[in-house]
Amino acid sequence: MSATILVVDDVDTAREAIADSLRKDGKEVLEAGTLKKAKQYLEQSKADICVLDIKLPDGNGLSLLDDVNKMAWKPKFIVITAYGEIDNAVEAMKKGAIDFFTKPIDDLKALKMSIERAEELVEMQRELNHLRNAQTATSKFIVGKNPRMKSLVDLAQRAAEASASVLITGESGTGKEVMATFIHQVGPRQQKPFIAVNCAAIANTLLESELFGHEANAFTGASNKRKNGLMEVADGGILFLDEISSMPLDMQAKLLRAIEEHAFRRVGGTTLIRVDVQIIAASNQNLKELIRQGDFREDLYYRLKVVDLDIPPLRKRREDLPELVGLLLRQSNMAMGTNIQDITPRAMEALKAYDWPGNIRELRNTIERAIIFCDDPAIDVNHLPMEITENYAG
Image (cartoon, rainbow, N blue to C red; front, side):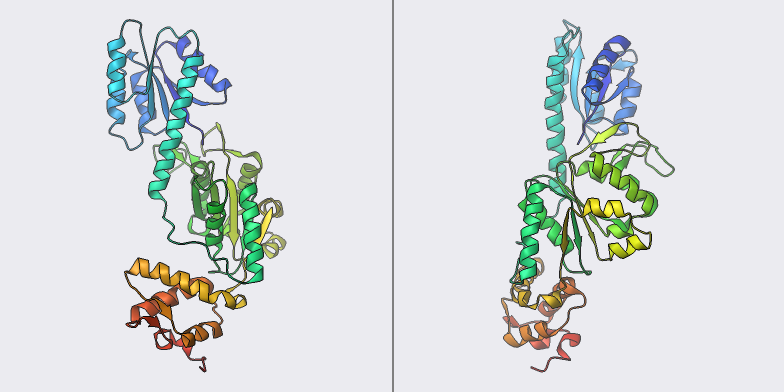
């Protein structure tokens, strides 16, 4: 994920020399010649790193460090001070600046090295924020005994190692997001973000802003602060696009371009944001049929389908039910504070005889319901819903 650098100096030639040199290195750079303008950028969360000249025409630059300490997102400061004013630099370091330089800066190499260190700190801060917000996995992925599932898991592991685009298909509730999470856990991106997006749950008018972000006040209703898109947040990791079939055609074209170029522009922005993201998409719809109907782009379909994983419904992998039930029992006991250790053989036979139209999602709900009504060490037939037991002859 790119870091935006704000260069603050009232001397145009000095400010432009730093900014132009950083732009030549491919950096995203903003410029401010006054304290007021710099504060405006920071309040809009537009900058991740601030190269700050302390002496400005409308105030002392050190006041900016006090201001950002009240903000949720705190940029990294590198201060510039005149020769002989080391006391200001010391004060800046006490307030949280990570480095300082004295004027004139004839060689930008040292400054750029300091900026690189600041970029590393910004990336670490983003990853920590992601880890705080991420859900903690409570169990391992179940492969099962089904030959088709074993083959799919092998393909998933290869896709993870290669960071290839993956298209996961299957009926609703078959565990498409679980498979995507598995790819994240077994691949080289496991320490990087896994960002899941339900395309069907986001209004079409907001989807571009959610994926690519937007600049401050980029459109009616946009906030007055810059917003990083989820593709940018997922930089280095995986972006999981669930229900990709619901994405409108114009957005499909923009997504295709972003995938092919590994870059995009925020809504209302001009700077090209470069990212390294593995794309995993999922759908419970027949995408080939949607292509024939003109509702899905064929070029995007083949771009996503570098590795194709079609997950079988639960009724076609009944031999995996014992392992899946064991996993769901452990998860439910942990979540509900219960201690149901087992399921009786006849209850398991009843589960195997059922067709599971809701697949693993329905199985999870069934186990949770059974635990609620179970006062015994093991779940029995009488703890199961009527739609499962009414056709069971055991």
